[in-house]
Length: 167
Image (cartoon, rainbow, N blue to C red; front, side, top):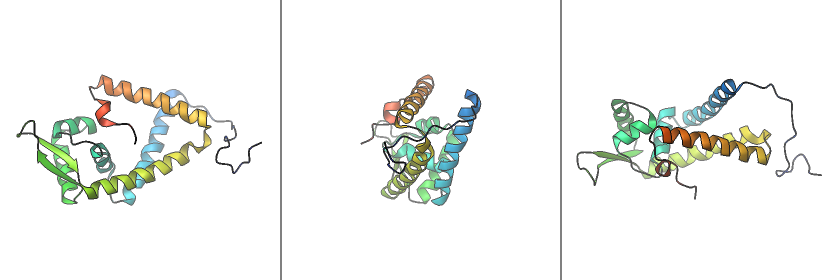
């Protein structure tokens, strides 16, 4: 029999108030976004600034692509990038493919901050799902991934660029 303090032990089953799918997903999104917002605030970032750094971790998109990914209009992205550039987190450069286009990339300082935020957010999410068994966590990951992939496909977003395999 596994001990309760054993990290490999499965959490005990608890009775739970069941929400409908809409309420459950909405409430879960509030919980997850709240956790990310708290981490962002602790690093003097807004939620959208945090999303910007996350989007730039492994790629250097153009402004239009960045606007599409962040679901912001181009003028909002311009202001967002201006502020991040002033703080030394990103830099702009002319696109090699089209000198009229601008690409945005993360700086070493921005990458360091993004990694800290990512690690702290991961700890909070792991804490949130601690009540689930390993099987339930794997199943939740699979189901959420299917939803994200389908939504991206429907919106013309290439996930191989957005979410490369974790190293």
